[in-house]
View: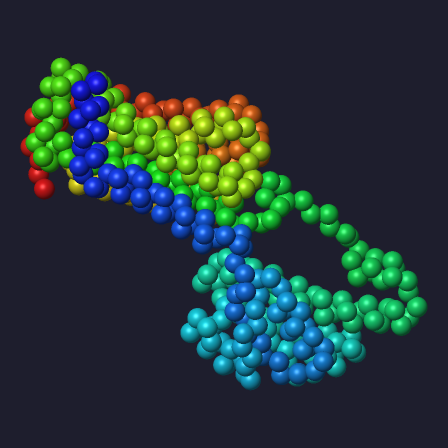
Length: 383
């Protein structure tokens, strides 16, 4: 095993694919995604205004809208048709429309109609800007109602009770900043790291066939496939663990991402992530002992994992067959353990089934050991 380990270290050093795919690209992905969402939420997104009323009241509402963190009024249009064309040309994400007579109807309590249009082509931008525009329309009616009630002699407490009968006490557990960086990066970056682990693992086995070195590799292990696999992947495991733990230190301690779980939970989760991904990569090659097919399956599974993890779209909202299929993706179990034990600080027993599932992925190579050994001894590489 020690001789195989030295052989693998030599391969890792001479083949530039390994340092780039195991160190350089994962670090680039880590920095890219954490920098892209550094502000937590998208800010200063472009909005348009069609103000056919053009009164002091509507101009005040536009200024208040522009003062919101996520909205930035960049264009003013004369007609709705011009504003709609701007959305279609991706110049703005939405626009607010004040028809003629808005202020007059508002002061006369005749319920003016304020329209806001937004594009849902970009889901996050559309949802956030819709929230801002809806808030502005509510503030406009509340301001007029407050002035009217004050003129009638009501106290500020009575006015507040009338305008807001139910007071909402909002608590956003674990992520009070509503930071996209905290809950998207912690799923996407580990998912892409799993992609690299899948591909490098399958590539390592496939190149033994491609370069006709498989028999030499097994001979160094006295034809014991388990010894050969441990010696081959132990150096890679140590490198992957160093990269994963660097990522965890960077996001949880340097960037200060919320984590209520203990540091040992992060260590355990990183170890399970690496071993489960390597186990799946070896299993994929064992099912189809072909460099091209194994890497294709690993790529497909890793890309689907990001959709099936349940971060961007909850698994409970998917169709029943897709809910069952989600259990076949290691990233899904990683994400469930992360949000339960790290993000919210619950004990591991709350996610024991997902922990057992990751352990199952680690043990998948046992099912294909004989097939991998047979492939290494008898298969001929086909491009």
